[in-house]
Length: 375
Image (cartoon, rainbow, N blue to C red; front, side, top):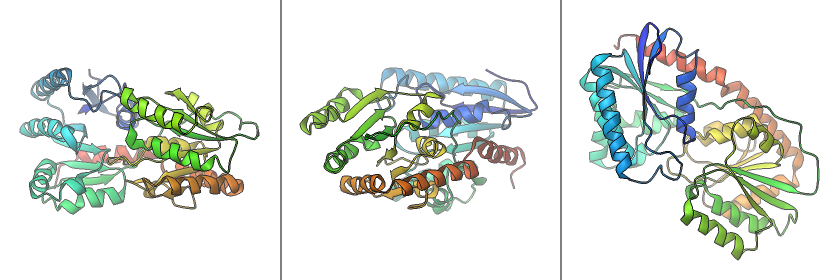
């Protein structure tokens, strides 16, 4: 797939479906007229799974897809050599091995490469001497984008890579959506959990917090939106709900997208994101909640403390502590004026720092830097 232009860029990326933060960010970059102005785009799509549930599973199909993507990448580099490659790079897990092979192939052709990182974990893994050497070899002679200054410093700068071509910080963004009128006031206090539903996103901790909150908020409800539970995880959620008699308090709705998200946000009082996911970086769902002006309770992992200031734009808690989560929920229930102020400040910060316009402008500058000869 290609589009006409002056500078040739090859995109090596995942795109929706399935829908997750990395695939959405890739779509923002790939489809942006601002970022791609004056360029000829070609696409090698990495689609290793058709669903959220399948992202972490090894399969013969994934191996065949790997071979197919490698062959297509080789063809593009050989037949229509690009000026540079935009590569959504996985820096941890089996994805690191897979993407390192793709990267070494690109380097064989001496093509500039821009690696966009949307996961973390390099700092921990690079404590092992072999992995530290591996990362230095991987990132040598590349341009790297990370989502916050802190993550760039901890994950990339700390490696002391001698021939890193350039490093940039571009915070993620989220699409804007229409917000309907604020919900009518009633005696129900509605919590919103909107995320992919694998366990590390913290839903079980939120369910545990719910059992504590019910004692003080009889009208509390938890509405859960998202995909990716899987049968084993689903059974675990349902068992906890049944054992703690939460059947009438916890409602699962499935995934939601587009302007429907605005309706969902406006119908709830508090957004809760209790993730303890080891690779969590800059969650797009938090950006969406900020845009919606939601009062937010979230864990302070990854780049989240650089997105939201504690007690100014959200309440930021330690991950894995249901009691602390419950206390923050109860606090905002009892202080509705402060909750509204947190939401307003979060919304203002979204449009001040994380809007699509800001993202496109910063990413375009990064692309232009990649056009220039390396020092």
